[in-house]
Length: 352
Image (cartoon, rainbow, N blue to C red):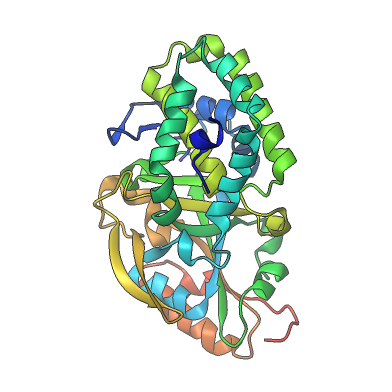
């Protein structure tokens, strides 16, 4: 696939000058406002899952990581979670899927022209500069993006988990759901240089409509955007394009309600995230490891495993008592208080 430009001849919303690998200072409220402008669907989904917090509030929301029991035990014992390259995901075309949607939308020419018409009075040349940045980073976005996935979790799923997610995991071994609470505001994203964003299950007409909404929002917020540094505007446009590529999946996966923790070490690395060569399902690959340990700097306090964990749900299994005992002991060893009260066994009657 050719870059966007040649076809013409997307924390919260953290703005970064990708050409210099330096963050442009931006406060929390500004980041939310920029997300509402440039990523309106993601902004709406974030606000809905955190129950529309008011200014000054910092509520938490439940997310869940469905995984095999062996992997869950490793997460607890080692107090870290792996991020894998998007090239090794089950749907290995995910990044290309989002990229191809962007190509089809921008190939029309009219979308780029409409975007430029509203951005030029605010920041002349910003659209071309953002597309140039995207073109320059496309290979790294495609080949060196690392993610781990979680799903939105509701109170109704506290005891049994979600049937469709259990079914989606391969049988023959134990399955576990690790339920965590994440805060609305946190310093973790900045400390680790991570982006935390919801996945969009959008066919081309929906993505097209999203860009139209962005154009309308830029027009309405033109006076506000004029007060921002040029690097912020260019960075916001670049992140908008990248988010549509990294966080767009086929609409058939919509029931997953997925969010992604995204790490791009070639763009902006973190000394707190270590990489290593590991073998997963027989395939040697580089993984990046997010620490879940309070021994890390103060900014990581929100990401300490005992602080994060809401509960652990053991999926349908012929060995519920053995797994209950094992995970209770593992959680105790990780410093989780009242560990036995946080382990639940799903008794959904499905074959294992």
